[in-house]
Image (cartoon, rainbow, N blue to C red; front, side, top):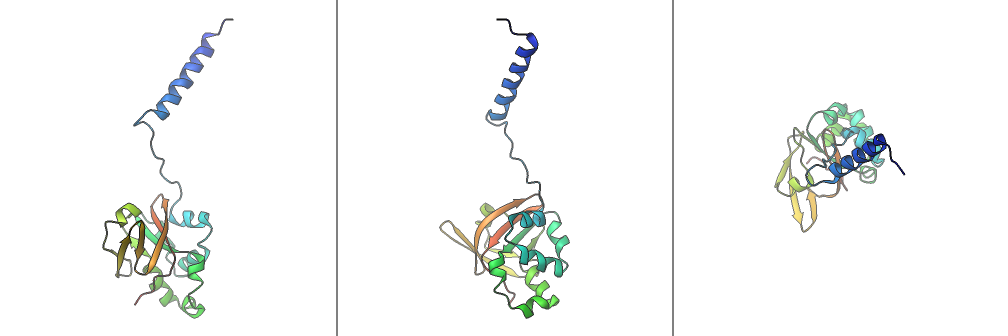
Length: 161
């Protein structure tokens, strides 16, 4: 049985391409395609937070370059009194307490921090106990990567003092 040279070339090209994808040092981590707002929407558990961000006029702050967001889940946001959510000034103050502008702080980097300076100008203490991290009194549940920053899912809304 004779195999055409075109077929042989195709098989050889595919084999070389497959090896280059798996060879050490050649595989590259693909950057996330979604910005912070899109990633929060896609996660599906931050509807109240996103609604509040929009209401407070802070959507642009979450789509800027290099931002770290401490995102409370819908369950956490449900604990905030409705009157607080309806007061735009209070709401804006609360939300700015969840944004660290100009920095992309991963969970690994968070472990090296003693405090985070928020867009509200507050220093939130970082506490590490074993494999768990907390920011102020909120437990960091997981991290979500975005094209313009990092989201730390937290179990509480970080209220300003």
